[in-house]
Length: 90
Figure 1 (cartoon, rainbow, N blue to C red):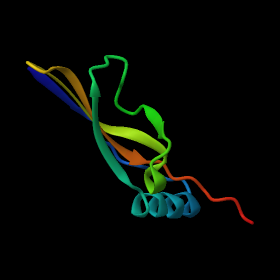
Figure 2 (figure 1 turned 180 degrees about the horizontal axis):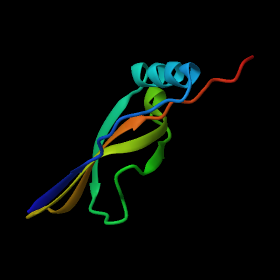
Figure 3 (figure 1 turned 120 degrees about the vertical axis):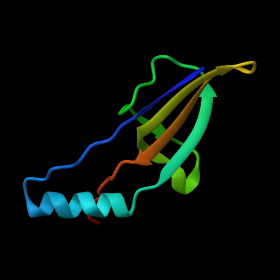
Figure 4 (figure 1 turned 120 degrees about the horizontal axis):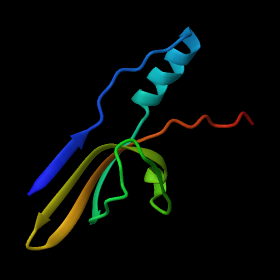
């Protein structure tokens, strides 16, 4: 038994600058995928932070979420995309 939810949508930008930053964010984003013990509080679109994983450390948004229940127990599979963060000017 399992369920799969996907977050799909389109982005609308009001200005050229917003569109430029959005395109830059998508082109430089990282994807992560991992499985945790089942958790009903995790939702599509939630943001989370990974720390201690080198270049993969940072803020992410859940793009795909899958819950499964089998002989091994309840598992939640998470796929996330990194959120764009502007680097401060030095």
